[in-house]
Image (cartoon, rainbow, N blue to C red):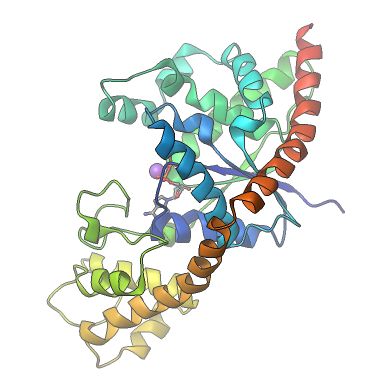
Length: 327
Ligand code: ADP
Ligand code: NA
């Protein structure tokens, strides 16, 4: 039987955090075992916020290298750069015309982002969900792994797909979400009530995938905990719960196992152990990354070979769509 297809994209807008890695990227790697995966860097989405051209170009290349270093396997998966497959913008235009102003107005992420970027509330920010729908529907994806914050956008993609299928005849596969477990949410090391994010003003709040071992150790040692000095998973222990969640997701140990491991020990033992686990998890990734980023010719060859692979699938869908509309 044919494998189901998974589609996922990530924006190449700079550093990836440990949150991005444990909450999304590590899962991209695992999904390759069970699905036919299509991955891309969503660089068209990135320009809904102003980008500095040289930094943007560099971020795209670095994100491509990092994803390969993390384990995106080009023998099994397609991994391309969105802007290199023109069909995304073409289908997005079509879907704009099949999506209502009212539907887009209800998107909570638009409301949040237009508050955050009040000086640049552009039309792209508003119709972003139509481009995301195009990204997914072009590949007839069965599943889309998403964080809770993207649920509403995926629902819109499903609605638009069903609407188009209903108006004409079955054209698009209606995609189902794969929603990350609650525990997959990594919180700030300095304020464990907020999610870990690179936009945190406090650089000690987040770990990046490329942080060196000393930095990782230092940030974990400074992580906010509590005065109980006891490693247990419980309400009101947000800082410790977060560290346990990170340790659990790397080692595969359950919370009970972690509690037993650190029974009778304090945070002075626990924090460095979490840091060590993260350092060892990231070490081979960082090493592969350093080799990849030093070989620009190889990276360029990879993305140049992958764009036409994606485009071959995207074209089939787009040409069906155009015919049905009457072109
Ligand atoms: P966006 O929300 O625009 O996709 P982000 O950089 O916030 O961009 O997130 C990229 C991916 O990483 C998403 O799948 C998101 O759910 C996941 N992610 C981001 N921050 C965290 C976090 N702290 N914990 C777990 N997953 C996260
Ligand atoms: Na997010």
